[in-house]
Length: 213
Picture 1: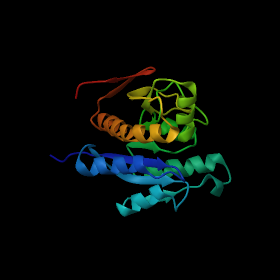
Picture 2 (picture 1 turned 90 degrees about the horizontal axis):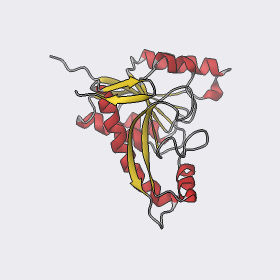
Picture 3 (picture 1 turned 60 degrees about the vertical axis):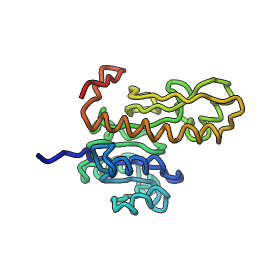
């Protein structure tokens, strides 16, 4: 019997290194995710993540919001690209924009994002990358980590799927904390995607329950 693989589209940033994308690609290729990356969408054609996609023969489509007359046109182009590539699951990997309502509606409970802190702390508009780790250290909390959540109409407000905890050391800098959290992000994101691919995530209002496979 043929195995059905989850077809994943990854939305990436214009400047990041693309390590979360690479972690997803690697996990698909070695079987830790029962899926394949069938599309990568970015805002810049020359972004590092786009090069990573092409090196694995994955279609990479650049859609810059500046190239469209309105947000509605941009959102329509994104939805068309996702549907044309028969996307089952959308994964955000550094993508900074709030998704269009049309995309959220079409893929409700089928969009994942990873955030480098323990939501609901240190999240929301403007909280990304080093800004998160700087805020964590400035506040003096003892633990940080990462959160994988479903995406809705706002920044970091969707139901939480998984969280992983990373201690904040007394002498941490934003750079050292980020370096320790990043591999945990990769592991947690891969685990969450596999749970989705195996049909083990059940959304119950604001909560996500992991059910037996």
